[in-house]
Length: 120
Image (cartoon, rainbow, N blue to C red; front, top):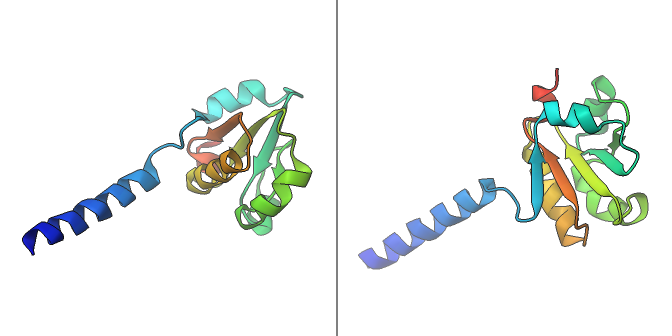
């Protein structure tokens, strides 16, 4: 019985840790790095925050596709041939968005660490 308790605890910890680990195949950049690539026409910039958050403050050049709509809109609105750079408020939703994009077959996905909170 005690073995089962340890197994349950280990599985729980595994899923918690896995949730916060970076997604395999996703590059992470800082907001400083983002500033150096903002004018690159070969990149697509996606803000996955809500429309209200986006309206309140956003970076010019970013397209607003809320996280909950990303799976439906990515196929039509984004090219799999170009890098996709994803941002949110803190970096958590964009990390989830990066995983969604990878699962949809986007091979070149970059997450902005710290999100808009880190943007100066």
